Structures are given as C-alpha cells and as structure tokens.
Amino acid sequence: MAMFFLLENQVVVVTGGGSGIGLTVVKRFVSAGARVVIADLSDCSELARDLGCRSYVVDVANENQVSDLMSFTVEQYGAIDVLVNNAGVFSEYKKLMETQTSDFQFCHDVNVMGIVNGIKAAVPHMNDGARIVNTSSMAGKRGAVNLASYVASKHAAIGVTKTAAMELGDRNIRVNCVCPTSVNTPMAHEEGGETMLRYEKLMVPIGRICEPEEVAAAIHFLASEDCGFINGQAIELCGGSSAGTNERAMQKLAE
Image (cartoon, rainbow, N blue to C red; front, side, top):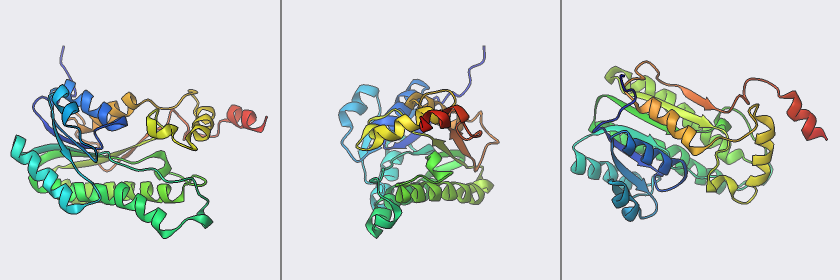
C-alpha cells in the first residue's frame, strides 16, 4: 500500500518546538522521517538528543536571532524544506478599555513578527516547492471578549500567511496556517483559561477541546508534498463550532 505524507529526509524547522503543540509536531515529523531543528526560547538540547534532532535557542521576536537559526539549520542539514512557525504567546485577560500599548506589542512581537522573521530568514535557504505552516487560532477568525491583543495578533497572522502565499507562489512555496480553538496544552490551563475551556467544550458540537495531536496532524498534512494545491488557507480546527449556533450549548449557558 502506498504511504502518504512522508517527510523522509526533509529538513524541518519548528519554532516553539520545546513544548505543547510544537513538541507534538516535532515528534510526529521525526516519526515521518524528517530531520528536525527544535527552535525554542528554552534550551532543548537534551530533548533533541533523545529524539535525534538538532536544537537552537532563539527568541523569534528577534530578527537577528531568527536569521542565525536558519543559518545554523543550513550548516547542519544543507537546506530548509519546511518551516513551522509555531512559537506564540497568550495575553492577559483584560477588557479592551483596560489594555495598554505594551499588551498589543507583546503579542504582536511574537505572534506576528515571529512569523514574519521566520519567513524572511528561511525563504532564501528554501528550494522551490518548500512549505511554510504558521500557527494562528480561531481567535484570528472572530473576536473574543477580554483578549483584544491576542485576537489582533492572530488576525494579523492570517493576513501575513495569505500575503506570503501570494508573493511566494511563483516559486511554488506554499504558505498556510492552522486555526485551532483552545488546545489541551499547559498554556490553555493557565490563569483564567479554565473558564474559557469550559465555555468552548459547551460550544463545540463534538463536546470537547482540541488535542495537540490533532493540530500536529493538520500541520503534517499542510507540510507534506501530497498537499500541493492548498495555499494561502487558514484551516479551522474547531470541532464544528464555526458551523453555526449551538442551541443546546446556549441553553446550558442560560441555566
């Protein structure tokens, strides 16, 4: 039987690869035969040794550090076939009228410029036909009370994805992003997150939140060569919550 979505000997950079969704992506790509660089703000050298990867400490908001990351990857492996811009931050829960410029800057620097820096640094080292997958959020498709700075950054991430897809299309470099709802990772359970998780479990028709393995599977699909005509898309991983109004959930919330 033919095998699909193999990444044998493909060189992949995963930012935010040391934990959560990123670590799940790294493990999946290693299993698919990829040669992976785990790029993270934390030192992942021991993790990388265990998985047979390389690691690099980087702040994706720092353009020079990201450029050095891509140079390191090329020194190790010769080229870059896939870039997964997964590093991201969440915001404090604040009403819009209580936010400061610094709240928006914090999210923008990582969630938007982290993607921009990654694309700008990686593309010169990519062959035609390479793939870029960014992590946005369902918050990039709609609003969310008390999360204005995060929502704004994730909307921007989708805009960057679509623009990059158009500009890089002449080299057949495909750029897409995934937009999950709340994902069952440590970040989702931080202060204030439990209330959001309970709400989303009610609103999602299948009655649960997304698992990191499900996000990794979507990223794997978009990063594969089998997915050749999907470009510039923001793929929703929402369990059906965007399909329409969930009347049963609304009734439960009203109880």
